[in-house]
Length: 202
Image 1 (spheres, rainbow, N blue to C red):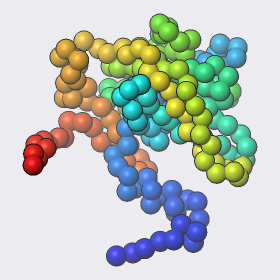
Image 2: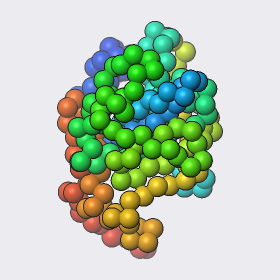
Image 3: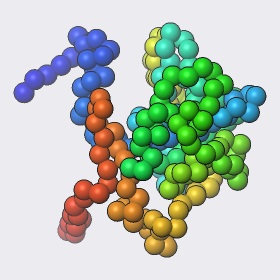
Image 4: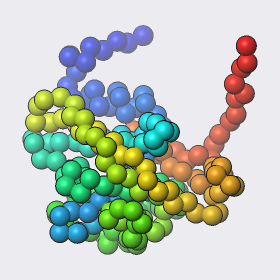
């Protein structure tokens, strides 16, 4: 079995190992607004649900040479964001929204998506998404103390928006959800391929 000391790896090789092994990763399609009210949308595969009480999600945004990604900068100033789930039908648009645009340029327009007003926050949702969460930022955690680092943004969910077609009460139809997860490089998977295990009882 190969073994690697992180201290001996450059950043890119460490990144490849991490993102190739921790799979699949759910994608948080993060919507924010800047101080002028311009919308921003970007996908993050460093994303996860981390608590149910209160319901909390996080996304981790990179900082390069001290320059924060728009999602992070906007979440800092507004204290809010939306998380929109990606399915197979929106996967191409999700990929398009990852393009590097000028600050203030709309990823919604670039990817052919429809921004829709949220109820409790100013950040827009993606109308085409089958589910979206409205979130209020609860904390930022900075990882590392160098110019190239990550900042983890925690958000408490204050409202869920869920398409009726994927709902059975409050249970989700995974086949209908058809969620997309990230592997590494250009690789993705969906929730169509599943199996079940029964939890053992003592």
